[in-house]
Length: 147
Image (cartoon, rainbow, N blue to C red; front, side):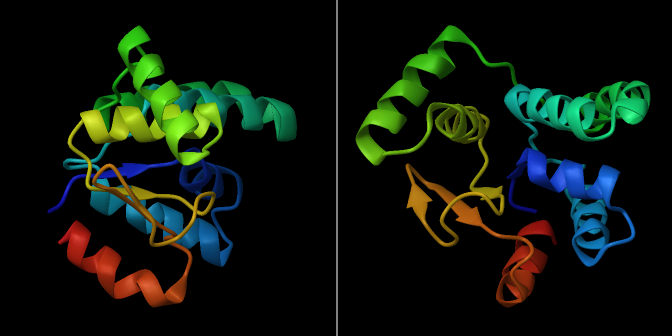
């Protein structure tokens, strides 16, 4: 299995829309990636922020879910070194700073792909490839990465 990083949108679909097509796909990816996957701490924070805003009654359950993610995945912190690397990425490549933080942390953790629907599908940045897991044309690639 190639180490992959998961963006917060995957967690959100799995938790807030588990019966939708994207929710089912997200759950499948989470289950298959947990052996060697990465969820940057930034993504866990984004997940909690959105749950708190969109489904406040679900926030206590989301806190429990974050604890499970932390136990099952590598969850590297956002350090001052990660912020410095992210600032360079944001400046050089035009990414928003928080997206750049996710990229910097994922790449430094050995991830070769970031599964996200929020960044340019197929783009490679410093050895980290952005893959939209909800794009049907990417299913075979994701299957290969998670095998």
